[in-house]
Length: 620
Image 1 (tube, one colour):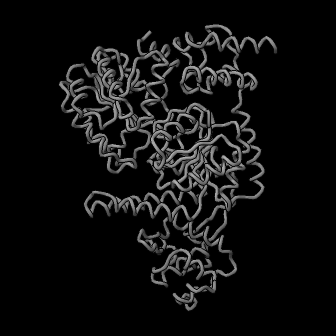
Image 2: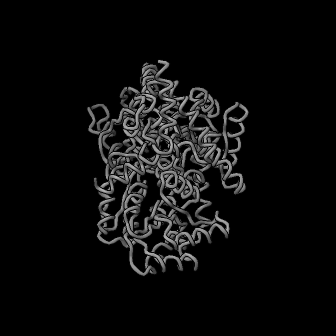
Image 3: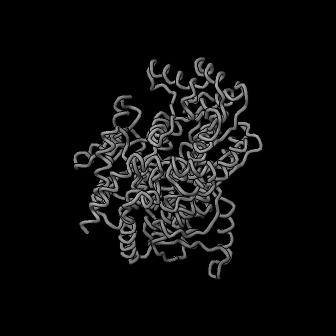
């Protein structure tokens, strides 16, 4: 058997490579640089860990977060691979010990924080040992246009240039627009790289956007139906994290929290409580999660809308890493937009960049926020919206998002749309969304009188439509590009070329069949009942064939994890336990057929888990 397949099976427990993995492994082993753009959960780490175990020398993995390093090193050590990490969490004694072991050739893989690459001690080490490959994880951090730009990542280039011999350079990321991809290739100076983009789609993830009047009530209702599951709830401020965590704790949920305002010790403890399933519900800001390899996260809820699609998809992608169905829910409110606008402005002010660069980045961030907001209002396929953002085009129906599971009826709103556009035009494009809507609706407010909108010919032209419907139509016009909202401190509506063309055509022949037609999709009420039925069907598909056995295996895995001081999923993932609870393996051969069980894992745990399966099978 090819050595790479032996390693894949014996160390990691898989019979075959996933899409794109083998090409990247083979290219690295042949000495080519590589760039892999693969969605979260697609197995990026396998792409550099397998060749690392076949190279003669050491592989350096540059990683941005301590939690990411600890997780992957723990998983490797559990699988029988000697690996280490070098970062600020080590004591001086631990650091010296790690360096001594590295010099003796004890490690095949060393994870390093970018800030540590150019230290005298680390430079001394890499001058003495053979570095076969440098893998750059979360490679989008090297791009100023990436959503997580980290200046420390630029040290990687200097580090590589100072090595006695240039190693293979392997870069990996889950989210990269065209511009970020070009930055990675250029800044890292990849030589004739093998570029593999497996696509951004995660078919096991269900996407939905909710606009609840009471977010807290909606969240508690969801959790009451998913008590046994592990999940992450993202909030956009520390204050909201504190409030939501307190509400859930009072309601009796095993919850913890994470944000930058906590002490290092508390963040570490809370993160471990979540990873080890002592507190399987985490409420956090976006400071939490990058590199968290917890495979059994069954839902990610965004309590507030994030600032861009990149952040949203990366955070949502922390659900369902084991390939099992998981839910990604976003709770939207208009306040979320205003908070994000404030955060973008604050970020720009604190930047050390030149004024021109600050303005450019601010404009870019505001445009990203606009596209994130449009996601919350589109009635098209949510998955397709995300994929198109990253330049991936396919069908406009996925069957696994809220919009695709809801049947819509098409309503012609061309006339209403044109009245709104004409109100924008006749007010000389000076006002924001609320003023324009109040104007066409004929509202008698102080703002309407102040702006003299009650004297506009369009005032009250749509007084028989509800403000809710008018807001839906205006949002649709923004999404489809007939109007746009400026990114100034006081956003105002402006005309686009498409909007002018639509208005001109409608004014010329409003009563004829139009070449321009605005169709608004609204959900049919009866489909909500059908959708609930589909939810039950989807939930049933997640369950193991013998759920009682699954719970027994989970309980034993948890007890074992406590004794060994490792996260439960490091021993076996939920997916592996579900396969055991479906196929009832009672022999070594049958156990090795289960996904995620290689020879090393079998030698460690196979017999004890089989005993539980045998005992259950005998009682059937």
